[in-house]
Image: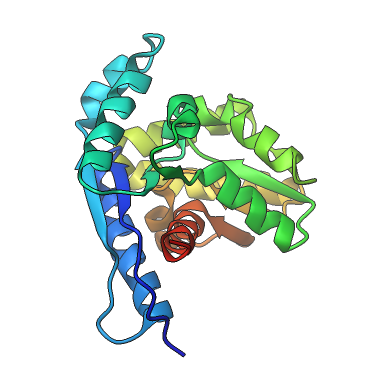
Length: 234
């Protein structure tokens, strides 16, 4: 049965990086079409950032938050009422976006935690950038829902980080990415992993090229589903 309700406009802060922002556009429209039927698509606006400028700002306190705040203001002015940041690591800089009241902020960490809790997952390994994995943000979001977060070893964290920034952020699945997936398969299997979270929006293409023998949780898919759900709540 199709859903004929009017959608609230979704505002996206993207470009961090562009390959996954492209995937957000595709998956948001597919999610709306599945739910609403016919030729329905997502009502959205995008503020695509210069990723290099964001990276250069990442070690200056408050700098990325200022960039995100300015982008959110532009999206709100363009009619957005639901807000998402198209990056897992970008959520480390979203305290101001969570606090603002002009748009409903949909956090990727919350979408992940809710999905794992609903599926009664007790423990999951996180894969992502070194900066994200060494932050308490995602483990705390999971712990609040009764899910234990586990991390790969530091050497594998470094290997993943190199593959993400040298290849995957450029839209390339190359030897570094494939080697990282091989290392993930070996190390996490030895740790008895069952559930593994792709906590980087650029990881799905690498996993498609070298599948992993675990139950995978794609944060990009979970986040787009949560954004669409919020848009229909309007």
